[in-house]
Image (cartoon, rainbow, N blue to C red):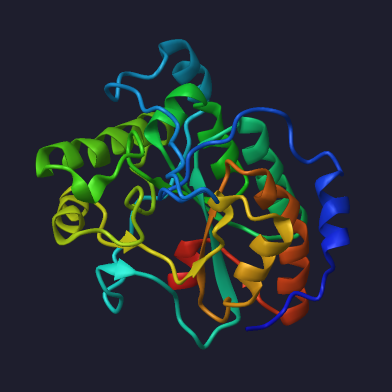
Length: 274
């Protein structure tokens, strides 16, 4: 495994630079065990998808957006975990939920490096923060669907799983004019065959997986997040990250610096695959 050249002290300095605003952080896409062995609880989910606030939604859509729609890539499998290995490009994908200030900090840091990312948004998060749909698209990033309530979609009956996919798709369409460019299942690396079929019926030709897991949702520290990414990333990689964790914000500047040093360009998943 390749070791990160940046010292832990650098990460501490990065973390203290004021990128993270205070607030609670969101649950990750899979449960993890604490040192005591107990499964850490996830943030509570709403009882039902529910409509977005009309006031917030109308403010967020005051100007029409020309958001891209999903694309079919005939040479790619139904579930995509990485892009072409022969080009020096990678995709950083963020699961969209958590404190809005953290999301804005991460987007801003990516843009300062000339990077573009992919955000897989949770529908209930968009209900609470509809302005972030515009912020993501205005930055030139991909915006996709990460289900409505961020539950274990592979374990659901088909009808409930379909509602999770279409519920988020409807929010995206209302806010942006599109159902988003990608679908990623919640709390799973890959979709079950049933969920894959449901996603295709909802308008997503592909399910987006990944081949590099930052494990930032386990809060291992910024240096560990960077090691997890930089030790595995290579041409064509798709990296799983989250908006909801301080370690991610602290690690991202050094990760982007190292990608620049290696000549790896961070692009949207659409650009990576296309």
